[in-house]
Amino acid sequence: MRLRNTVLITLLHCVLFVSAQQGNYKFNNYGNRSILLAGNVTGSVSDLALAYYNPSFLAISDNVGISLNAKAYQLENFKLKDILNENTTLSSSKFNNVSTMAGGIFNLFNTRFAYSYLTKSNYNIDLNYDSNYVDEDILALFPDTESHNANIGIKSSVREDWSGLTWAYIITDRFSVGISAFGSVYNYKGTSNLSHTIVSSSNSVSYYESATRFTQKSYGLYLKVGSNYQFEKFSIGLNINLPYMEFYNDGSFDYTEVIAGVSPEFDKFIDNDFEDLKAKKKEPIGVSVGAGIPFNKNKIHINIDYVSGISKYDRLIIPDLDTGDGQLTTVNFDEERRPVINFGIGFELYIEDNLSGYGGFSTDFSALTNSANIFDISAEENKEVNIGEDFYHFSLGADWKLKWASLIMGITFTNSSKDFLSPYRLNADGIDIQNDIKAQLKYSRWQFVIGLDIPLFSSKLKNLSSSKN
Image (tube, rainbow, N blue to C red; front, top):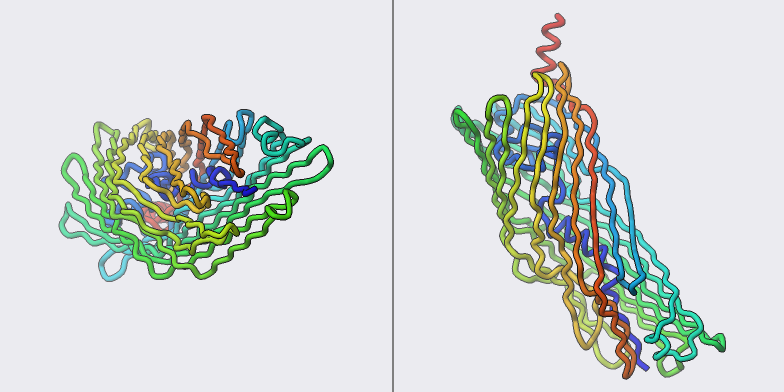
């Protein structure tokens, strides 16, 4: 008997969140006010996030010195329902810090410079699920089954850190340009483990396990080129994100499969371990256009973002696997992205001279057509799985301006839900056990922003110091 199991299901959770942070371009926002405006600040950014959203606004920024940003936290909830059978639920809740920016602004050679650091992506997951059930499919395969245990283990992490330098220059009284260069350190890791243990009435034990592990590293450079024009009654901004320039890459892939206790002719142990694999990371060109439109003492922030597609390419080039049945198994780890257009709107409302309210909405459509997938190792069919999600982001908050700082408070909410056909499958000679039930994937995220924004050595502090003197 030849026993196989596609381990796609064990990484559905990982694929979702990697898609969210790599196939969705507005999943994370940066900067205190920019977060509360849902990132709709290409034509009106006023905090340190200008290095990310539009570097040209550095030339007309009022703040010079180190900027200490507010602290942000988030609560993430994830749920997979009916994924292994109709009573299966995998859920996870996590409360942690939100990626924020740090940096400062200084003058040099009659122009403006800024240095900044941000965590572009930071996600970790560690899930385990045990299920004990005996159904007709299991009994058809092992008629003497007394008990059956299926275990799924998932670990995944992706982290990308950016360190950048921004330069800006005033061309005319109304027109400014700027450029940001960010060095990137990217690490992506994933492991999965799926096991079945079947105990018969005679106390014999049959065991199946498949384990998969991969890593991908990439070091490179991102360039952002921005400009803005200040009209009498509103401002507009243009920002171009150039394609990612990769300088170093590396990858690895391991696959282990064990069958024991079935019968001597079918028991096997397979171990594939590949190091120093060729890897590649691509990010497409993107263009953002935005406007800041004052009315009375309020302001509307409008944004449109276009990101081009990427034709299919191999993120990891993995040699064909020896699965012990006389033929090699091809493993795909490729990716393809479609062009996407996102839009959003933010509101800045005047309440009092020292108190403003913020609100925002933005779309965040998935660009993934094919997502990198190494988990379907079937020699007969090599499926491509894409569960990249479309997200909608909402934000609400307030900015209380003190003489020496700003107290910023707010929340953001992100939600998505998707039904899909579970790809779980277990094959044996002459038997094809399908699990063709509809599974459901739900995700929600609450972010909480609270703290002080202190522009050290800014004109505010200088004026405060002068007034005291």
